[in-house]
Length: 269
Ligand code: MG
Image (cartoon, rainbow, N blue to C red; front, side, top):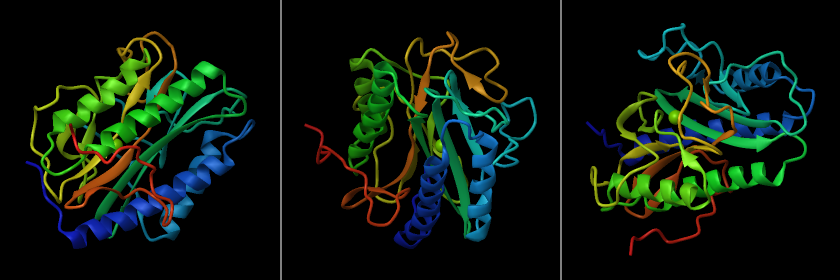
């Protein structure tokens, strides 16, 4: 069941989302050659707790995971790691593709977002993977409008990624979010227009394309942390928490005054 949120609840989620955006902003400003992902994690946890919030990933134990709860505040997924990378003592190297995903619970409501960057110098093909994944997320966001269907969102994401020769991960999906981090509906990054639930004001989604340079398949050990691409090639991940409102998509995981640039008005033709 998709739980609709009131405008008061959406404002609470905006506060959680803003904190997530601030944490990601701080962490990315630090991420550089020689820095460890564990150092990033320490900063993120301090920021979240100082704001009176709780790191939502730390201690999280989904049913499908067989290797214990997630041990950190950030998921830091490097290179062929798709998602759920565990912060480590390994210093980041020039050219590493780093995806950072984090979630917080603030005043009973959750925010969830992710961003990918290249450390130091980006090879053109890697930069393209990042740009296309971000664009795929934005293409999904613009169709998060009342009256559209969830399949419209999924298809919009998939179309952007595949048009550039990349592949969307199918094993892991986005999700509804609210007083729990993962609510209905599951939101695949592939799908068919005109299918799935009709979107209504008050729905809030964590939309999160994971885009692979090679095969969409992930390694067989995906029921443990981290998830790797099956072919060892690179993967990028971008995520925002978005409310469907009467006025269109409202991206909640942003810092005040720094909206997400959306290319199209979002009405399906
Ligand atoms: Mg998520």
